[in-house]
Image 1 (tube, rainbow, N blue to C red):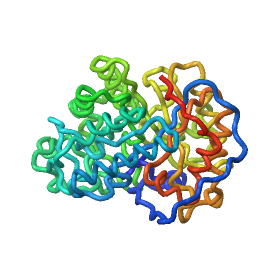
Image 2 (image 1 turned 180 degrees about the vertical axis):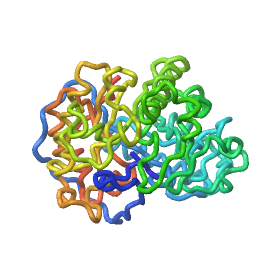
Image 3 (image 1 turned 90 degrees about the vertical axis):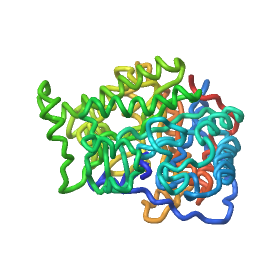
Length: 420
């Protein structure tokens, strides 16, 4: 999701190449007509998630560019909300902490540069507060999306705002892959990012807290994430550095969940991981896939345990492949995740790669406007799947080949309430 924008992306992950910053895809100016209804999946009973991510990192979805007047930024945001209502969606997942910054008046971190073009500059309005109020006025849920450890999309601390915590605490920072990251192995870092995120929960009646796929960074060939000092200080009880890193992320997940429950009971906690936990060739419990990245081994995120242990309220694995993909088949992964969620209290929604539909350089399946609709038809065979989230808002607006229109015509003929 990730998506940068967090969603970087699947082709890189399959080949083992590192994730790179997502680029906004040029959109056609012509309006794509609504598709005629096609074959529909099995009818679903009850509520379902119909969500869309709104990415702010690098101005991927919103605002369209930094420095626009507050009134224009607000109009653009409202347009995304109104479009979600027109497409009979019920949830927007707004990225409010893209790079150790804030889209609300945070006492912990500076205003995001993606609002004004200058990190720390007050934009003259409260985007998160406005988004919550306007989403709720339209009957939409607002899930606040945070990236916990990414500091910057560059590697120069001098470019951060003078008041930035990373400048005050340089020992918290690890340069890696041309970017700056907080070190998850430091307890003081985990405590700080938890406080920074929970500030938004305390201030606003958000319906959920949402994390994406970025925990430890995606691997970069030939580079080492330098956490030697932290491991020497805190890793003695573990059999390996990998086990220690996974425990660091586990601690963040558990402690953030407890903080949400304490501060605003009823607000949910969801995570959207990369879609492959482990390949079956690595672990018999894994999926029949051949992905170049496995979250357990490369991002140190034991997503299967989080679901099976009910540490989170919902999971949205990013299943950004087509049906029949030879390395990571959407059908295989949908079934695998349904099996993981079965018998747990964790709701399962599937992340959908709308951004790939009609985009240049994608496999031929993504040139078919029905591919995405087929995903929903297939997923409906698994009762554990309770909905879908589409990446991302700019692609919903552009709908280059009418793939989203086809989903709406085939599956969203009437409104639905999100699962509670």
